[in-house]
Image (tube, rainbow, N blue to C red):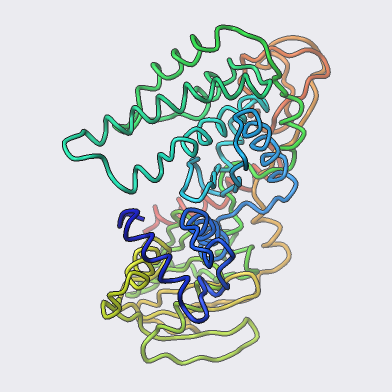
Length: 438
């Protein structure tokens, strides 16, 4: 949200004053009705991920493990309450208003020990301690360079994370390794990657502490690797959304493109798009369609209509906040002719592009298609001899650990399941061939 803390605060207070307050179909929790603005916003962030975007990684045991690490760090920091950790299916990790830490599953995949995971969490916990999310919402004081302030906040969070690791009993040197694993591209809002890693290494000073490689890998076994293709992937002559149990039949003349779980399909003169969203958000979108018709069929409830232009009539703080939040969620553009198919877990939005629902070839996915849409997962194997991984040929599938890592016999090794990883490649090759034919 970019409206600033003052307007957000006013909006939440207005929301709490409503006769039957709700957000995405759920009654507001106690922090919202008690006017605890930060905690209320944190709840909204989590609800957006779970009930609007289907973007939470649904693994209760893994989340409990990661939350336990946050609890341990918060106790060492002397905080009265640990932040709530949420695992998202997208890449990237960040702290939000409301004492939430959103950590991306792909981030966890890259790490090699519990101490490194603790370093990532400690960095975000430091942002929460310093109220950096609130400062970001307010904006920098007049005359100050916003980018300089953001870079300073990142440097402070790195330094604080090293201290928090040591207080909690973790090896402080894990912070430098964590930064090396999760930092990719440079940007203006962060100090240089090499400088951050070097500074963290110097601050750690080689002091000992708990590493926990076996502990982390034990909790990552069977975790999805890379993209979670259950929200959409091509399987043979269909595009399959395994999370919803649906398939779109593809014809030989169709030109197909898949980007970020969105199917874009050119069929004749029409271009269609389809993507999955959460059921509460789907109900709100369907209720706002113009010229809508609704029908319940074997696949579920289908609402067809045209997307209305956003209303600007509600100038109250809550109206402005609602528009700002919803503008960030996946949705069709105003004027688009759409069909929204609601299922038990979520819904499929279909931007029809002049076509009808019947012409789309929408059907239940077959058991074979659901199995083929399963993503690759982590498999933990054991080293059979001491040495470098590049020489050991440990993994039957793809090696996820560094080939230069040295291990002792019996050490756990992070691999990707070979059979599923091979299935993952085939639909991409078929899609590339279709594009070349076009």
